[in-house]
Amino acid sequence: MKFGVVIFPGSNCDQDLIKVLETYTSEPVLKLWHKDTDLQGCTHIFVPGGFSYGDYLRSGAIAKLSPIMTAVAEHASNGGFVLGICNGFQILCESGLLPGALLRNTNMKFNCKNIHLKAGNTALMATRKIGNNDVLCVPIAHGEGRFYCDEQTLADIEANGQVFFRYCDEQGNTTPESNPNGSLNNIAGICNATKNVFGMMPHPERCATDYLLNQDGRAIFNSIFNL
Image (cartoon, rainbow, N blue to C red):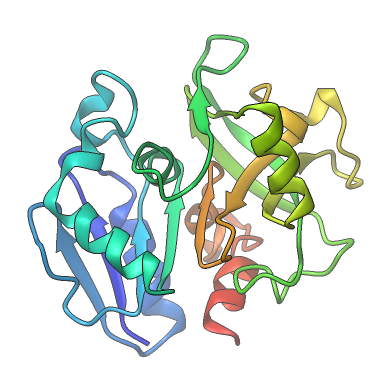
C-alpha cells in the first residue's frame, strides 16, 4: 500500500488524515498537491474535507477542474481505491466519480456535532471490520451535506448495495430525527457501482485517535487497512 492525500487550496482536514494514516500503518503517506498530474504510485487516494477554493460557486465545483482530478479519475477507472470525506465527497460527486449531489442542509445551517452511523453494506472494503449491528459515533461539520439524486439513481444505489453509511440513532434506528441534513434514505455516504470509490459526509479521521476520547472512526480505517 501507498497512501496519497490530495490537498487543495482551502483543504483543512488533510493533516488529520495524514496523522491517522501514519499512526496506524507503516506504509508511505504522500501529500498530493492539486496541481500535480501524477499520483506517484499511490494505491489508496484520500480526498479530505475542508473548503476547497472557499466553496465558491458550489462546494467541489472548482476543485473538480484541478489537474490532480484527471489522475484520480483514471486511478478510479482502473479499480483503484478512492475515499472522499465531507468536501472530498462533494468533489467526487461534482467530478462524476460518484452519483448524486450534496445540497444545502434542510435547516439551512452549518451543522457541527456528533451523530450516529451504521454501515449500509458491511461487505465493502471500507466497512468489512464493522458489524451489522455496530453503531458508530462520528462528527459532522457541513452546510451542504444533504445527499440527493433522482429516483432511478436512488433505486440503483439501494439495489446494488452502494450505501456506505446511513444516519441513525444511538440504537441503530434510521429515523427522520436521526437525519441531520435531510439526506434521502438517511444516506451519509455511498460508493460507486464497482465499489472502489467511496464518499461520506461524517469525519472518521476526527475520531480515529484518542485525542477526543472517541475512536469509533478507526473501524473504517481498520477496514481499509484490513487490520
